[in-house]
Amino acid sequence: MTKTDGAPRHLVVLGHPDVRSFNAALAQRYCDTARKCGQKADLRDLYAIGFDPLLKQQERPSEAQFHPAPDVAAELALLRAADVLTLVYPIWFGMPPAIIKGYVDRVLGAGFGGTKIRRRAKHPILYGKRLMILSSSASTRPWLEEQGQWLSLRQAFDSYLATVFSLASHDHIHFDSIVDHASPDYIAECLEEAGNRAYAFCAQLEHERNRRRIALLGAGSR
Image (cartoon, rainbow, N blue to C red):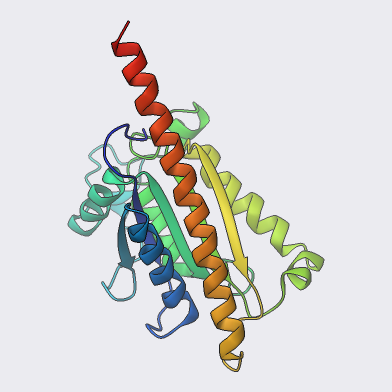
């Protein structure tokens, strides 16, 4: 559940193979903004760390002797310490990249299978945390909406993850027409918008943190 002490911590998970990509710059801008707001941000570039997206037989939640592999255990430790999980990825063929889906399967789904989901059990690590998604696409959002893909993605990925993992909230910021020949001015505008949105989000987190602190002080004085 969200911590009541200490600065909010963001776990930023990047899923793009090019370290010079817009998505990489987007993830860095988000982290820089959070840190400027006095909050903490851990950036996990899945390609850079060589994250293996393939779920192993022994990692399936139905396995009686389930134990996370060392790489998954390391990611779970970071996730446990975070208040916000931020996923940054491009939309490829209407869906997140395979490495992001692999992160969901191996890390978010570690030891948490269909039986617990059907029982509406609270996720032991994710319960009460926030999900933020920053995505991009070469096509425009209106085009994605016309194909029905935008609604499908929001329902089948964003909302579904928030529901089954018992997250407190979720938000999705999308940047379209991100192509190799995009003008530097347009890219700069998008990154500026991302920074502004991240700043507003961090301000909201800080406001909520202060409200909790005041409530705790009030309860302690009774």
